[in-house]
Image (cartoon, each protein chain N blue to C red):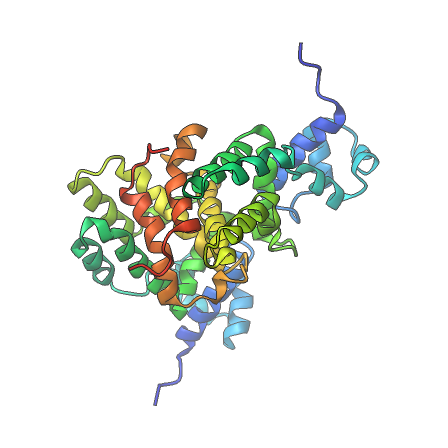
Length: 190
Length: 190
């Protein structure tokens, strides 16, 4: 039997959903507590303050190692697939709502506009491209983040009728070729 | 000598900038009038109401024909480039701020979540893919919109350090291969 979620878990789940829907500024602790069905005083108890709760809710929901190994192990001509697998798999878990929350809040109003680029996966991809002598690794990672962010937005907030219906495995296969172009294709070709 | 912009032009310019920055709901007519340096009563005079002003500010800033011909004329294996040329060229004009305004407002709160997919360019691309017997044209267009939307967001609101520095022609060349994969690549390849 699955144990009942603790108050802390319920607060995190509610926080992910509300931060994703409304962004950081427009989400109140009171609304999160109401959704979680607990006393608002529990939030400072567990998380310190709103920023602390946001950080916990948007934490990468898998160990960093789980993202690093596939990116480092993939042949360079399959790195688009490795990145798609690592990231889409994370986004499509229930905790992936935390990634959406981060994206929504970055778009809205948080000062840390570039937190998306600091994620460990992209750090490893950049390092990998540099090692393998691919030109313009930083720009390529920004292009790949753009492809992924746009696709996720289409799948969620922008509610694309077809893209929101494909399953995780299909989405990974569909995204891989475009990410591969971003990361290792000829950027000057025309 | 370029003629001085009319009040109507100044209102449109201010509206594009403010709708892009804050989205539809959070932008007031008063703020737009203040930025344009004109009386707020001129806005209903020229545009009827806030929605009328938004529609005018986010109107496609080029004749539809200018977008249609390149998409129809391109060989299928260069359609990614044709789409990138048509759309990036529009986004990167001063009036392109209207497209950003639309994107920001769609993300924020407008009811018409799918207006992006209704744009004439995508309609022509869908028709073109159907004519040429490419599988899943609707899904492919959604993927391509995602790639473009994500890239534009990285270049603007998300402030990517490298991507925001490339010029229009470079961006077109960089985006073309990923868009080509989205539109004609093997979506099931792995």
